[in-house]
Length: 85
Image (cartoon, rainbow, N blue to C red; front, side, top):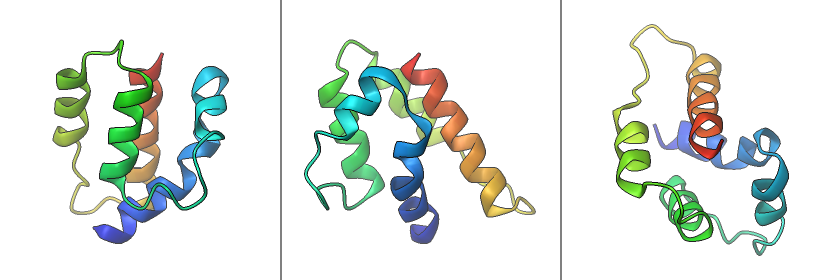
């Protein structure tokens, strides 16, 4: 599961636009070392969102037993998009 989280962190910036993309590029290189760090940084940068709801929605997301990793990552990124809209 840590590999999936690492992949999500690495690919995350490819999925964001606008202010979120500008925010991403202000982060120092290697400052996001885990999915938890990424989420904390997102919370701090975009605190107008309901953090409890964001946390619950992401926490409920699970990879299905027969699901391919790329499908799971796609579902995760889609959820992130929906949250940031």
